[in-house]
Length: 487
Ligand SMILES: *[C@@H]1O[C@H](CO)[C@@H](O)[C@H](O)[C@H]1NC(C)=O
Ligand SMILES: *[C@@H]1O[C@H](CO)[C@@H](O)[C@H](O)[C@H]1NC(C)=O
Ligand SMILES: *[C@@H]1O[C@H](CO)[C@@H](O)[C@H](O)[C@H]1NC(C)=O
Ligand SMILES: *[C@@H]1O[C@H](CO)[C@@H](O)[C@H](O)[C@H]1NC(C)=O
Ligand SMILES: *[C@@H]1O[C@H](CO)[C@@H](O)[C@H](O)[C@H]1NC(C)=O
Ligand SMILES: *[C@@H]1O[C@H](CO)[C@@H](O)[C@H](O)[C@H]1NC(C)=O
Ligand SMILES: *[C@@H]1O[C@H](CO)[C@@H](O)[C@H](O)[C@H]1NC(C)=O
Ligand SMILES: *[C@@H]1O[C@H](CO)[C@@H](O)[C@H](O)[C@H]1NC(C)=O
Ligand SMILES: *[C@@H]1O[C@H](CO)[C@@H](O)[C@H](O)[C@H]1NC(C)=O
Ligand SMILES: *[C@@H]1O[C@H](CO)[C@@H](O)[C@H](O)[C@H]1NC(C)=O
Ligand SMILES: *[C@@H]1O[C@H](CO)[C@@H](O)[C@H](O)[C@H]1NC(C)=O
Ligand SMILES: *[C@@H]1O[C@H](CO)[C@@H](O)[C@H](O)[C@H]1NC(C)=O
Image (cartoon, rainbow, N blue to C red):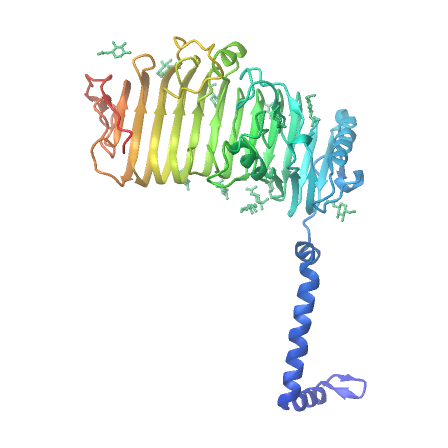
């Protein structure tokens, strides 16, 4: 037995047993322990999160650039109250000076780092630790106005300038925004409320907007509650977005699209979870005459392994602003759940441009109202100067491995005499339905084919082929119309 001074553990246990055997002393001890716990809990919950952070070890940020800074080196205070705009500006300026020597990394430690909008620089890595949150200030007077996007002609909601994004970048190359799942929070609630009450005179700003830039990686972070579109790469090349969580309330958060690649090429979006108040993803390329004049398409886009929920709009969309053209898009391993629509293509007379060579493989639709939706009369225009005779071309849209359950209208493809939909193809589709079996594969002005058997049975507009690709029956009614918005 181990001896401690004159006592042994054996003796100690015996005296403790004797002490606790009296009911009144036991009660006293329990009371002291209980009161002490409440006291400790109260004093720590004054700053509960900090208390836990002190206990949990913070994973060290990996060194991803030759030099790395800490936002605290520039006077940043992560208390959720101090405004850190100057600290971010100083940090970005320090990294900009390191540009030719491999750039720099800015670490954001755990805490809430309140800030007004700021600009990023080239050769920069912004690294958000676990428990770090960059939080946008709500007061719109801190948000600078910027000129409208050239391909939109004016702010999306109001004429004239628009609010810039919380985190902004222009003419950059080699930019990384990553972390151990830290958060960029736009505090959109205040903006959504003002938007609904018509208190804003300018278009709301995105959360993160990168323009005229290339070689961009956005990974391992969470983006939440954007005032407007969440992540908006505009006229960029070579962007990878991976392992990103994007969140906003599914209702009451207007226009909070997840990711909007806009006039971008060479884009990969993968392994993301997106649940927002508008489209999960919306591929765009400018609006009517402004987009046609700007003339920059979105092309070579790969979207895979995504889980998306969109109660107000759709999982993955193309359009409706697509006047610079959208082509060569592959969407695969997509799961859309509890949503209004799964896949959507939207355009209108006046857009011009094209939507072609778009393919969707291995899509699961879980309780969505309309599975696949194509609409050619999305008549929202910047002004009255669009030319309705300038129509988009829609060609070569391929669907394979489309599965799901609880879908009301699996397919609704609404082409028109002016905008017929050409070259659609369906293969390996089995979607469980919730409605009567007639008019649930709806078509109008659609030409294309079905290979093998699919469920539900296709509209009469499509040619039928067997599994070996031999023509079984050619349709004689590409232009017939069976669209029923009531179901
Ligand atoms: C940043 O600085 C703070 C305060 O000096 C420190 O507690 C924290 O560990 C640092 N974090 C990183 C990621 O360097
Ligand atoms: C970011 O840079 C752009 C282009 O120079 C400028 O228009 C904008 O006001 C800047 N934003 C902020 C927050 O400084
Ligand atoms: C995704 O991000 C989380 C949180 O940052 C990280 O733990 C995980 O390893 C990442 N997964 C991949 C495949 O990078
Ligand atoms: C990242 O954080 C978000 C929001 O807190 C959470 O929903 C998500 O599951 C986290 N991702 C990972 C990979 O841990
Ligand atoms: C919008 O404009 C009106 C009238 O000019 C003005 O009273 C109001 O303060 C403006 N609101 C904002 C948020 O700028
Ligand atoms: C794309 O960007 C990544 C990240 O900066 C870079 O490693 C890669 O070389 C770029 N690809 C091309 C083709 O430039
Ligand atoms: C994401 O995080 C994981 C785990 O920390 C890391 O292995 C991976 O390299 C990160 N991915 C990117 C693209 O930053
Ligand atoms: C798919 O993405 C999720 C994150 O949403 C990730 O956890 C999972 O590892 C990814 N799967 C593959 C096969 O990359
Ligand atoms: C289509 O896009 C993929 C990337 O998603 C790219 O690898 C391929 O080269 C592109 N095809 C053409 C014809 O540009
Ligand atoms: C289809 O996508 C799901 C995710 O939605 C994925 O789990 C599954 O592995 C994919 N199947 C194939 C054959 O790639
Ligand atoms: C559509 O696909 C067909 C067959 O692959 C091809 O000949 C045609 O050029 C494609 N259309 C467009 C607009 O790319
Ligand atoms: C179907 O509509 C297209 C485009 O509007 C037209 O070119 C074609 O002649 C029509 N076909 C029939 C059989 O009416």
